Length: 306
Image 1 (cartoon, rainbow, N blue to C red):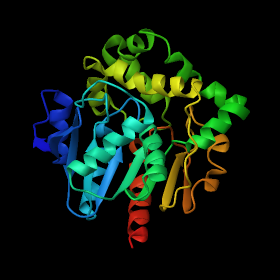
Image 2 (spheres, rainbow, N blue to C red):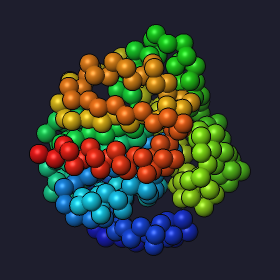
Image 3 (tube, rainbow, N blue to C red):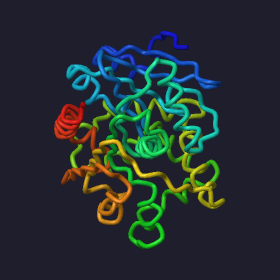
Image 4 (cartoon, rainbow, N blue to C red):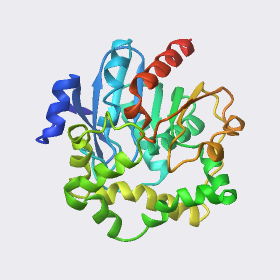
């Protein structure tokens, strides 16, 4: 069941509600209360954010997609922002949350648009629940098989992925994320961007507010800790080939994820794959280059509607 709610007391989220004219809702999902925003009518499009973000990650995409005739649904994923902050954080549970949200809204199938950790959910959903995903868009997140291969064979990618091991430490990563009332987090964003135009203090404030919520830092780091534990226990599974039309958008200047190590070869795991590289752009591609990303999204969505 879902229930309506307001956007809370956070100054950044209040400003967001006014700017985007979104509806804030809460869904009760099998022991998890999930916050999401929605706008528009038409075929369902679900936007899945990454680390260390929230629904605000898609601020530049919500209105254009709704205006183009889509019902846009943007959740705060488990552990983030206004959604409950308790585990488990394994991939099956996290993708189950998305399916439960769709079920609560009476949606049997949706387009999934995803970034970073949200992309990991997108790959897994499209592979393991093909009846739920009509089309898939992933931004700067490698297919799991590509990531596993790169960590085995590429010293460069292992060096880029150092933070995953750092995140396994107790309390220290949480303290670093919350340091100086968000100043370090803002610096992290800017260090991973080529253009700073869309990363002002005010535009990043909702992300900072998200991380500063009690329990948020530990919850979002819990995704990484669960993934590493599962990998060490040999729980990584080989995913079925994805049949859904898939668009992979990749910012070429991602400091954490190397294009050459992680993108070529993805076609072995996706039957209908289109790759679009975005030059001179860092990891948070949908925020840094929204006009280019939105044009790619709308072209893909309209040309793949059956």
